[in-house]
Image: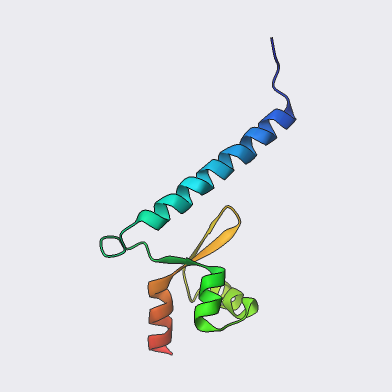
Length: 89
């Protein structure tokens, strides 16, 4: 009989998160943008698109000006919120 240790559970957790992240990435690539409202971009893509610094993006996030989701340590931002932000300012 084998016993589960805390290290075993930590390793399982890491593997599970890794698999979920792979599934998320694969599914987000296959979504048809015309049929779905799923237009979320990662921080790096937003910074490159808008030519802004990480601090500026963080200030927009903290100020509640744009919606975001944090998934497995990465921030994702709503593309429509960014479009609205620049229309109003």
